[in-house]
Amino acid sequence: MKKYFSFLLMTSLLSAFAQQKNEAIFPGKIWKDQSGIPINAHGGGILYFHKTYYWFGEIKKGKTNRAPDISSWEDYRVNAGGVSCYSSKDLVNWKYEGVALAPNKTDSTSDLHTSRVIERPKVIYNAGTHRFVMWMHIDKYDYSYARAGVAVSDKPAGPYHYLKSVSPNGQMSRDMTLFKDDDGKAYLIYSSEDNKTMQVCLLSADYSSPTAAYNRILIGDNREAPAMFKCQHTYYLITSLCTGWDPNKALYASADSVMGAWTMHDNPCTGPDADSTYHAQSAFVIPVAGKNNDFIFMADKWNKTDLEHSGYIWLPLKVIGGKPVIRWKNSWTPE
Ligand code: DGJ
Picture 1 (tube, rainbow, N blue to C red):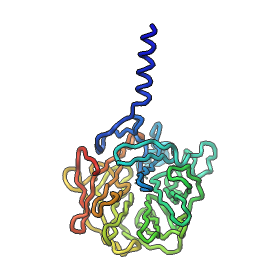
Picture 2 (cartoon, rainbow, N blue to C red; picture 1 turned 60 degrees about the vertical axis):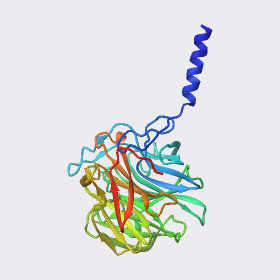
Picture 3 (cartoon, helix red, strand yellow; picture 1 turned 90 degrees about the horizontal axis):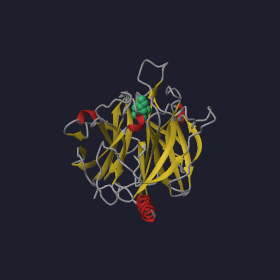
């Protein structure tokens, strides 16, 4: 009996200390954090700070429902679960850091109420204020609110304190991303004008408000899911077409400055399923630390009727001869 109990004690101690070890990234397959729990960080973005990568994303948990009063498009949704944060040194193994921005469970007028939409969170660091600034898409269940929300923290993983939501310069803001340039200036890039046209807006010096400096880009192209990066002296913007949760062909645009002019080009994805972005939608492009032409393309493989179980497609992106090229891999490791 005594032996049996010590065996039980040993095995439970071992499993308590056992950590999930991922050998590689397997695009589209279940990706577990170090505790062995599937990562829940959709529409995400990455902050690189003090040699650590922080992955922020939408917490999608629970049953997916379709809004019954909307028939013009498939408004599948889960309750807004706030924003999660994971950290990693190698981009393959991720430690759960907790809820970086909590939803509001009681006040239905709050931007962060669980009945609302909190999507595509992105975080950048402000070297002047020493604060981490998170921007995200804030909406009502039917996407009629179309605003950008902002939250701040003095620690990378949070908790983040929600400040406000804005309509930048009176304009709609839905799918969005952030881009921080080498000169420290930061920009909000968002689908505007009912998703017909994107806009780029310079943020204030503390990154917490839009300024009056903005430009209309990709005019009339119906693009969303923006992911911006810079290689050498060129800026790139990968976007999708607006087809709800269904995948479509990504396109990239390029420019000599963030504010434009932007020129639309071709699909950066190559090989089988390139025309559906490998059944996924762009979320972010990670510059690989210390490598000039190497990036990682992050995309969401939405499972529209069960959004919690949507997957992640991360693939290497290389800029070759001025053109971003993404190639499918069943598994791979960032070097
Ligand atoms: C596509 C967007 O890219 C997603 O973030 C989400 O807003 C869905 N549309 C909602 O249908």
